[in-house]
Image (cartoon, rainbow, N blue to C red; front, side):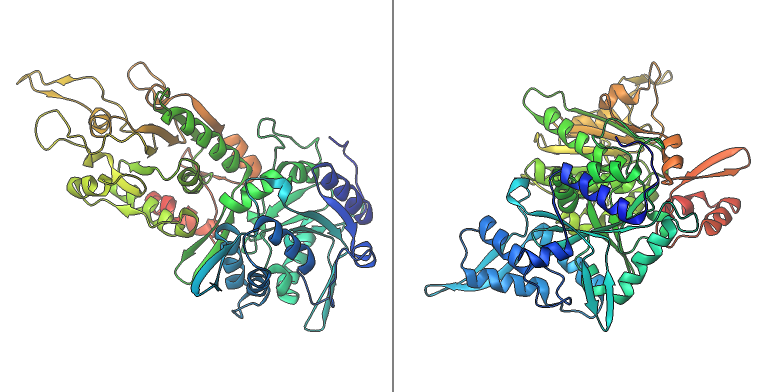
Length: 517
């Protein structure tokens, strides 16, 4: 790691380019790019490096004609909507799903799907870092600090400020990025995330992120978290911009959440990214023929984005485990509704529409498939209609049960005998396993329990990832609200006013706080 040093803006660009080279980028200045012929831009209005894009598309789509490749490039570069944010969402869908191009083969009409990236083999993609890249639009000419082009597409934008000038800070970098959105939106149409840094601090956000939602990326390898003694920019570059992680982020860890007329682009934070990937690997182990069906516990403090971590986890799990059925479990109707809404608003990432069981019969119907599906249910629906034996709803092994607030209602495996009439009753956890005998289980919680008769780890397995309140507050992912000797941690999504949350708490509407955050 680099020693702490306050770089001026030019030095910061050069050292950032060096760090990018260390993780696998070719770096050039815009002038070198033009002079060497590495880019054949007709003018400064072109923001995609067409020749580089075409070369990679031919390599990773070897079975299509050049005419289809050219049509795909036209689809990418010709914007269909006047709103940059709408075009950005469309472009992200091209990244994750590819582009379908109708064409003819002999006498048949066929559709070819063109992939923009090779997500399985990073080395088949082209990673280029360019500084001082000029963009011109509507008589506005802007010289950007650093752009990361992947396969010729301007995916990541860096805005760097002079750390030796005390009057300039990271807020100025953030404000400059907002100016770019207004003055050169054609560039930002392709942006997946943007980085603001003053050489001391470095934060990352999306097109829709307000300044408070620009977050620090604190780890390179997912194991060691780096504090203030390390360069935040170096950690961010090596931790999230290295080709393997960057492709994974583009593929699985960006979602567009629409609520009414407002669409927010969300990028996973570092704790979400690494927790999800660990949890996916643990799921592969647990569901194998030698597995114990206990995936483990994700212990992330309240307010740190646990619900979205569950969305990211489900989205990647569905692809990595070849389309399992995911049962999302809560113990209260209001929580079931809230989590179902979050998943429903994220259906693009999930690539399917979640279903919510209204009763036990509908739950059984939703589970009577061979694979696939995201099914929402409360624990209470897993109860026998009579007696103490719950019917088997499915004995498939490709079922993942994901329990929210996993420290609650997940116990009661032993019989509880009524002293008056001798009747026997079990807890919902036992009935759940009667109904899904070969499923694997993962718990998400902010407050795990460990006691002789109630242990979250005993039910679900070892801790997969721990992200406590101290880390969350330090990262700005959670705000502590102190009220009547209680600490109430909340996260603040884009556009949410903390004063509104405090008012809800004072008025005793803490469920409203939970639904908003």
